[in-house]
Image: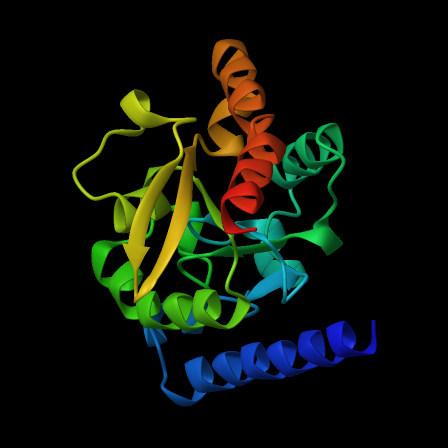
Length: 203
């Protein structure tokens, strides 16, 4: 138990350093200028599952935490449905500042933040990355369409490690679309089964 806490503390310190580096490196100064907070991530720094969205919205920007608005509540419900909670997983976005008026993040903004996301993943070393929406999916699975591959786990080589990517629709998109909501919940409910399969293969 002590080793686990030690490891979590070490990983959290490394994640905090990334946050300091983003500020020091002056990443996306135009976004930083209009944002209230830099929104890094929340959860277990030693998690098996990392959820990656696109960028903070208004509520996230104000609180400094990802997925705390309506989409976040829906995400919490789905986590509870598979007996998980925020403190057992890690949640972040590609872009760490809120784009003005909640517009989609621009390609240059995603590109600027990408190296910092890679560092986050390398520190946490999850077994599965769940991408929420097409913006985060396209970086791991380029040239794929989310309408065609949602809910289908893909094993890829990522920065010298093998990792499973599970592309899902973004909770915000599913909030106002009953059919999409049903699909997302169904896809989401596969997560424990996928984790069990990964664990079986690695033991």
